[in-house]
Amino acid sequence: MSSNLVAAALHAAAGPSHQLWKALLPIVILAVLFDIYCLVDVIRSESVRRLPKGVWALVIVLISAPWGGLAYLFLGRDRHHHGTQQS
Image (tube, rainbow, N blue to C red; front, side, top):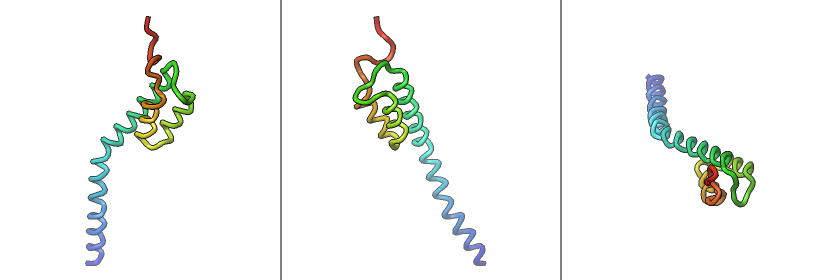
């Protein structure tokens, strides 16, 4: 009987954790996609502000998502010379 209680307790403990991961999965996917977007933006940009491009790439990757990407977008992204050249 005690083994049934242990099994039930383990199953109950695993249940909410599994549901939590199912709930957090879309947020984790969005955070990863946001970081990928920021990295691609750093690579494709002609110039960035305040730090070299390589340092911004490290900031995006090493600082917890989404803070590194947000820091790049607000502080490092060059709004005047971004993307392809205009004629």
